[in-house]
Amino acid sequence: MSGDEVVIIGAGICGLATALALHMKGIRSIVMEKSESLRNVTGAAITIRPNGWRALDQLGVSDILRHTSIPLQRERVVSLDVERLDEISLYHCVGETRCLRRKDIIDTLYAALPPATVKFGCQLESIKLDQHTTKPILRFIDGTTLTTKVVIGCDGAKSIVADFLNLKPTKKFPLCEVRGITNYPFGHSFTYEFTRFKKDNLLVGRIPINNNSVYWFCTQPCIPKDERIWKDPEMIRQHTLQLLSHYPEEIQEMIKTTDTNSLSLKQLRYRAPWDLLMGTFSRGTVIVAGDAMHVMGPFLGQGGSASLEDAIVLARNMAQIMGLNHVRKDEEAFYRFVRQRRIRVVRLSLQAYLIGMISGTSLRLKKFICIMLVTLLFRNQMSHMDYDCGDI
Ligand SMILES: Cc1cc2nc3c(=O)[nH]c(=O)nc-3n(C[C@H](O)[C@H](O)[C@H](O)COP(=O)(O)OP(=O)(O)OC[C@H]3O[C@@H](n4cnc5c(N)ncnc54)[C@H](O)[C@@H]3O)c2cc1C
Image (cartoon, rainbow, N blue to C red):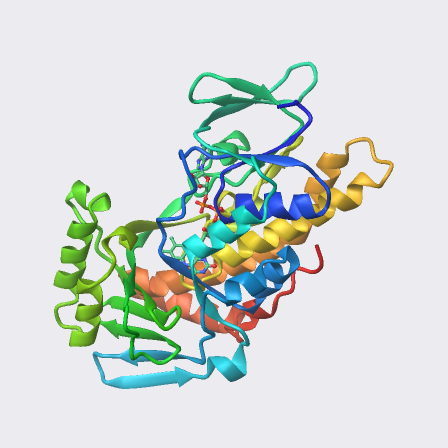
């Protein structure tokens, strides 16, 4: 590999989308992924709202993905404690919302890339800058090193690239989330809506993907003490069934029959909104994007879509600057990217943080302050979905 390439670290949604966006602008890149193959099994599914669809349209893959899922018609909150039912219509309020299997997103982005763009089994260990040329030198866990022109860190919430940029460590919400996909070979009977069931400080979400698959999650305040559970899907299932023993039978049945491979448990992390406001996201020709830049709680369901937006804005700026007579082109492109993205990701992560804290904190005063702030700052709580990242 020549040292003049753009190197992307991580083949998650952000890394693959960034490589594709750059490819569409005629910029060659290579993606270094630590896993031995595409990480398309974990993470079950995510919802994509209209802003995410705009980004997928730009990447030219939205029509392929539309074939994999059915649009949701509305969103419902069912309070099982007080037998209250709050409903809003998704169809009329917020436009296209679908739940996509993460595998479908990852596989589709990967298939759209030129062959051999992704190199597997390459785990970045550290970065330093060459003293003379200031080019980044990447060191991988197998001892190999690579000097390159540009590094884009799409290496997720525990990013090595973010550490190199001296970003403050990400924080943990006092919440974790179980996710899974249940398959119904003969079809399910649920309507196409995003239903949230609330009871006993627990939140269960149920979202049909298509006629045969349903995605669900369970957000819970308790962090299991037995360490083995993080790796053992069967333990995750039993633990969740125990927690939800007072939930309706149909929910318990859905969890009992969930595809074991799709089950995962994750402690929720976030980069503090105030750190996003002040953080330095690029240094020379090294930058972060996606969760590495702005990991947020899943309470708005926007982390993946924000990563897709990053890919479009980053590629657009890098392509625009190529044609200009600028001495430090990549640095200028990164400066513009951060300027264009900062307020967007601060707003998203602040809204997600406040919503997360309302359900996560046990302190009444903190809960009250978060409710006040979310009401004052985000009068229209759906407006984040109207965002348009623009043309590629
Ligand atoms: C419970 C939960 C529910 C969510 N629901 C939604 C939703 O409904 N809608 C939505 O839009 N978003 C949702 N999200 C957020 C979304 O999943 C993330 O924002 C998105 O996946 C971020 O993608 P990424 O590529 O930046 O990071 P990741 O998906 O974490 O990918 C990082 C990649 O980098 C690789 N990597 C890491 N370190 C190294 C290294 N040192 N060297 C080489 N490779 C490395 C990893 O193996 C991985 O492939 C949810 C998140 C969670 C936790």
